[in-house]
Image 1 (cartoon, helix red, strand yellow):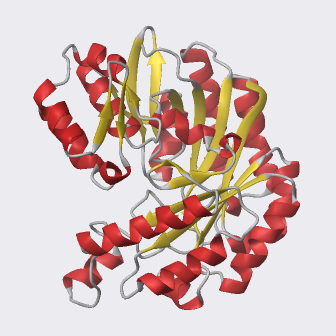
Image 2: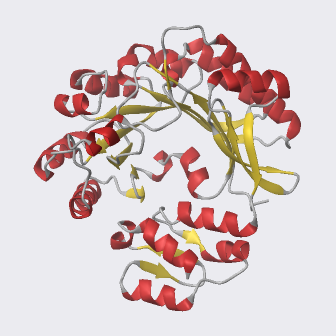
Length: 381
C-alpha cells in the first residue's frame, strides 16, 4: 500500500455526440438511446466497491468521458449522491465534470446538482481550428460557454489543443493571447498528438496531414511557457497551468502524486489499495459488457493486477516527474529497492535537465521537453 497521497473516484461516461478525429479514448457515438441501464450499473458498481474495500472519504470526484455533460442534471446528481453515500465526500471535495461548450445552457443545472468544477473541452477559439479538430461547437459558442461557466460560481478550467497541422507560431501566439484574457484560472495546453487507429493517423499515413516534428514542437512549447508565465498562469505540470495554487486540479494531482483512485464506468482505469496491496484495475470497455459484469459479478472490472514495488516506483516516477514540484526521490528508491544510478543523475544534472538532492528529483524547464526520455534513462540506469 502507498503512503497516503489521497483518494478519489473517477467515473467514465463513454458517450459522445460525435467522435473527434484525434481521440483514442474509450468512447462511443451516442445515437440517442436510453442509457439508464448504464447509469444504474455505475451506481451499483460504486456501492459494491464500498463493500469490498475499506471505506475512505474521497477528496475528489471526477466525471469524465466521453461527454458526461450529455447526462441530465438528475443523472449527474445521482452519481454524486452514490459516491457520497458509498464513501463519503469530504467537506469541500472537488467535484469536476467534463463538459462541451454546446451544453452551456445546462451549466447552472449541473452546478446545482453538486458539480463545483467545470472542465470545458474548448480546444480552440478559431473556427478553422475547430473544424480541423472535428468539434461541433463554434468559436462564438466556445467564448460564450466560458462566460456562462464563470457565471455559475463554479471553478472553471478549459482544455486547448495546439500545434495543429499548418498552424504557425504567430497564429498560436495570437490565440494564446486571447485565451489568457478569458475568465478561467486553470488551462490545459496539449500539443496535438497523432494516436494510432484514429482518423488523424490514417490521414498522416495517406499523406493528407503532417505529424508534428520535434523542433517545431519544442518552439511551440517554449512559446506557450513564456506567455503563460508572463500572464501569471504558470505550469504546475507539463501541460497544466493554474493561478492561484488552489485552482490546481486536485483529482489529477492524485494521479501525478501516486494517490489512490477508484475507476468506475466502461473502460475506466484505477489504482486502489485493498488489504495492504495496491492494484491496477481496468473496467470492461464495452458498455454492454460492463453492465453485464456488474449484474453478474457485482463490479465492472475486466482486469486487476497487483503492483509490485518496482512497478509502483516506475509509475510514480513517470507520472510525478511531470510536476513542477518534482517527485520524492526516496519514495521511489524505496519502492524499487535500489538507488538511482549516480552517473546517470550526474549526467542529467550536467546537461541542465534535472535538479536533484537526496530528497527530490525536479526537471528543469529544458528537461520538461524530454520528460519521458529522462524517466526512461533514470529507470534503465
